[in-house]
Image (cartoon, rainbow, N blue to C red; front, side):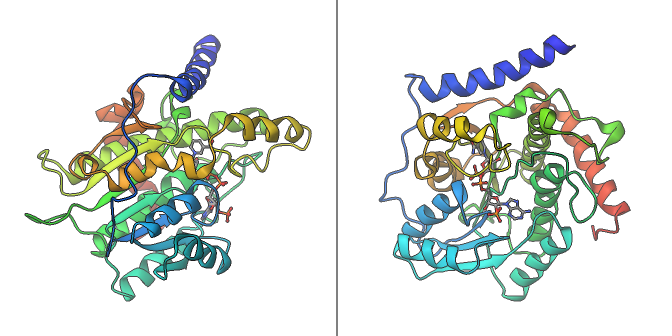
Amino acid sequence: MRTTNYNRKFSAFASGVVDRFSQRPALNPVPESARLDGKVCLVTGANRGLGRAVAVDLAKRGGHVLMACRGGHPDAGVEVGRLAGSDTVDMLHVDLADLDSVHALCDQLERDGRQVDILVLNAGVMPAKARRSAQGYELMFAVHFLANRVLVDRLLSDGTMRPAGHGDEIPRIVFIVSETHRAADSIDFRNFGAFTDYGLKDGLKYYALSKLHLCTYAQELSRRLNPEGEVRIAVNSLCPGAVDSDLMREAPWFLKPLLYPAKRLLFAAPHKAAASVTYACCAEDMGRRSGVYLHLLREKEMSAPAMDLSAGARLWEASEALLARSGEPQ
Ligand SMILES: NC(=O)c1ccc[n+]([C@@H]2O[C@H](COP(=O)([O-])OP(=O)(O)OC[C@H]3O[C@@H](n4cnc5c(N)ncnc54)[C@H](OP(=O)(O)O)[C@@H]3O)[C@@H](O)[C@H]2O)c1
């Protein structure tokens, strides 16, 4: 059992490294000429790291970018607008670790009559040890999975995102997941949503598990939104590879002198790592397909547990029940 877990962690890491340095042909990055004029793009966690680079790129292509952020108000929005040469960048507030804040964001979008064409669920966190969200859930379970589940539900039920009718442009939902989801065994439905206390040693294990929840949910959402195989909302996921971002900012001080130079040397700069996100947002074929998973610019299968149909259905029902128990509107 222990060996299997180590093997899984190793294979998740190895697949990341192999894809990063592989010479196998990959998809071609979307050319700068691909435009998003008039399209409304909502990006979560857009004030730094990968999300900020994505916001700049989408704004440069003419997208009206809504940066849904916890921090960086208003400076990050001003800076993204300046870098992109765009005056259609807006900052919205959301703390994904608080479901009330997710609802407040959705209320605001509904009140303003916004129609979102492209939703990039990017925000992520890697705490040094277990912490609780406002509603008492483990932080990564709450931010990576539960908040996105509530956000997508609300955007669809409010009509802020609508399935395409015949001949309409197909809206896109893009999940930023991680190859580390392969290191997670399976979802523990017996203790679903229960808070687990963990320290530094097990942080990556729970990060991987939260990304497995997110991958499984993305696949189930894709199936539910496009039941007959006809794509009405393109739901696709990707791992951007290792990014030189601030994700590991809570790493212990004694690791930072090693970690930071290694990160700078081996990890991709955010604007380079954004290529796969741009692909999912702009490439023509990704607007006609759903359930696709990219690692960097390579199409792959998610892990078997993430693709499991019964796990997807169970996750949907378990999270619906969990939200109903905590008084969340369904
Ligand atoms: N870095 C990597 O090597 C790597 C590899 C694979 C996948 N990813 C994924 O890529 C995504 C982007 O991460 P990154 O590498 O760019 O990390 P980052 O630089 O730390 O950026 C994370 C973003 O998420 C936001 N965020 C965190 N908690 C939030 C909350 N409760 N509410 C609202 N926003 C919140 C942060 O906001 P604040 O500035 O307010 O904290 C920040 O804008 C994540 O989903 C991550 O899991 C990263």
